[in-house]
Length: 79
Image (cartoon, rainbow, N blue to C red; front, side, top):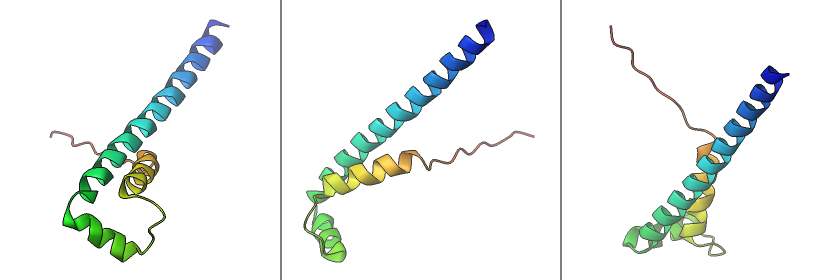
């Protein structure tokens, strides 16, 4: 019974960490999108995408949220 509770707690902890990671990535993406919108590059991106229905902060938040689920983990082993 104790192993089942420990496994359930571990599963909930992993799910919470993934959720928090996705929210932090969305916040970082929103900040990056906002910062880019202050530069001339922001106008170029909006021109290329040709969709004025969203701001670059919203686009950055979307990309940050989605990107949180597609992170790769690289590890280098020492010989």
